[in-house]
Length: 345
Image 1: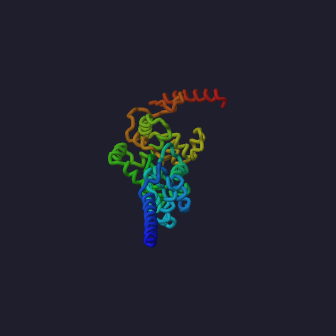
Image 2: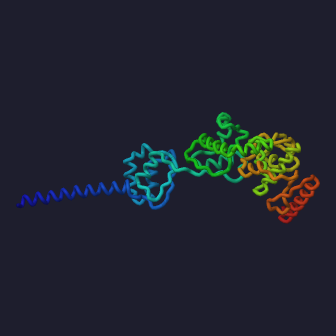
């Protein structure tokens, strides 16, 4: 009897061990692969030289069960499969799903935004590189790469036209060529048949519209003034009058001058619209969509001149005759001199 009891106890203990082991394995399986491991959103950036330890440490710092992250990383062989990228971890994700995202390269799309006034290639390269996994030197090289840009129908001189300020969904790890391909795709989408027809009706090509739009953008930050200023330049083009646009002169000096003086107007450059008639060879900055549409839909008026308003509010005074323009210019100069005197400059 005692022997039977002994075997019964032993059997019960063994069963308990098996049950406990099974329960432990089952719970680990559930918590590692099924249960939510995160309570809040977290964006993980994985760089090419990042170690698996760094990745698991980053995930563990926000995980409810760091042990699950480490076990799943080992089970998925993350050390050998790690993929650079941007990964958005959402509440409710399991540990194994988060790890598999990095192992399989299941990246989250990334917003790349071009905005504001972009007048130089250096600024364009910086705006792109600081939002992507690429350095500005690589972007600068691409902006000067004739062979690469020819694939998209542009040259290093006119490439500004390809970039339309907006927000684009891309992948953080996209290559420069892939990114430029995306910009070209959006450029083609923007230039609808309707816009092309409007350009043709004005006697301009899409590139010429972009060139004029870049000049309009250099004249004012007031969106409501875009169509009126565009109308002035189109009137001058029709009459064969030199555009005499100060932003084009600033471009000749790499935008390193604060004011355009008479001596600057003598620079011998095809971009100097005080010296040469017609449009310059290429855009002088990245033209915003609103400026392009303003050129395609200009205000119809008889103005041939404009200058900054003496109110210094960013608006302009427009004139039909040169005599009117001179009066407006004198009013502005007097206001500018008074402001300088008051400031002691």
